[in-house]
Length: 349
Image 1 (tube, rainbow, N blue to C red):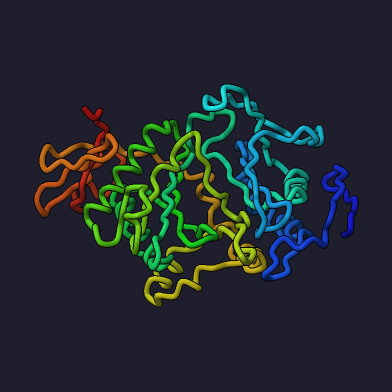
Image 2 (image 1 turned 90 degrees about the vertical axis):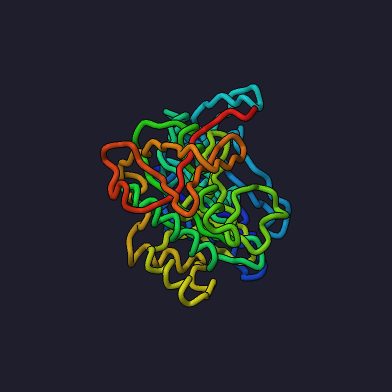
């Protein structure tokens, strides 16, 4: 195994076991992992900067047992920035790594932190998510093709509400949809809103969508995972590698690509490995850049007082065949044009 000492932005880093194969099926080595993160750094770093970062490390490769790491390791260089965040579950302060620069990203790659899972909020305001996410998870035999259909349904709802949304592959088997906010909000608000929309889709498309977490009800359907909108959870970063058989990447895609995948019914159209993702970024730029900058506010939802259907403390109301989801804020576009369902929070019992 080869070791090397390099200088990155004035920081000296010792890299170890560079020839170690981390993806046996493709012969992808640690050196190639580091090289990927260096090349994709201009794209990924803005999406990691200032966010508490959970790492999933694979020191013996993707076929061996990994481990999650939240606390910064004791042996970290003194220039690696951290954010102290109180953990109610652990009853202690966790010092999360902030991957703010290239040197830190290379240091993490050398630790075989293949998967990077940032918070949906910035560490300086940990209770205010800057984005809302929908993780579309297909239950076999469904795959990303079915996720594309659900994603397009979600895009249609958001368009009606005057909200833009941006898709990316999970790098695994599903599709993820992000709604940039970058305005004051809470996880209670984003979780309520995302749960309501998941239930709405399940109500309108019961044969294709499920909003419950039970795996036994997911067969052949797409689980719309709304629960990721939580201060205690993280979602795979855009441009992060995934620990799959091959070095696939959570890659931003265009809506035209989502539509094409659905039309062609070809899941392979939305599978991208490290080399492909770098080439896409060099050609197309960062398709996820608007997620960092676009300011949007979630509309308030109203409830139709009929035919109520409750799950987990959230209700959907539908009026026979005519359903509506009505924004009450002044800036919403297309108000009253398209029928949908609405939801609100309600205490059970």
